[in-house]
Length: 211
Image 1 (tube, rainbow, N blue to C red):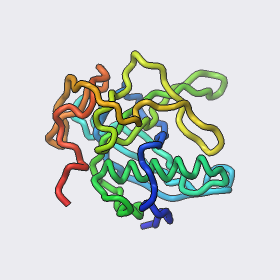
Image 2 (cartoon, helix red, strand yellow):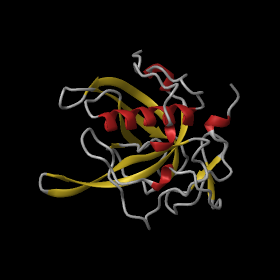
Image 3 (cartoon, rainbow, N blue to C red):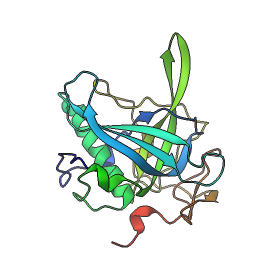
């Protein structure tokens, strides 16, 4: 177990831009996940720490147990990158059902169900364009009614240590109409990733579970 070393009691989750990458490509949309591996390690510039994790999709269907990798900044010389990372961490904890300031270490995240919006990022590797999934938003009570991303929308860049990403509308609190949902492993329903359906649908969200 490793402590995050972050005081989340005064952190606002509403302004976070989630990030990550790797694994099989899921269509843009909203999915259920659980983290199966996670650790705190130095960033590539050795000037800060990140929480890096591997999450598997828990929605039944074609993408069941597909992986998406995430990275959350814990400490960084850039105040913006660090504050955004702390907001991401707060949002992830809230998406799992933890109260403000309760999400404190890596072990608490393991196998806790949460819901997240997934985007697709294009990047260069060996001179070729590649694609990978990124976490666009961790869904909690404050943003559950926001329209999830779909293939009709352009992909947005994930956050990193040195560059601000474009504004991500998946993190605002504007309401929308619910749309088509599908059954999941957790007994609720989530918006279809392929169709980019709306909001929380009829699923039982993890943050609504009893304390």
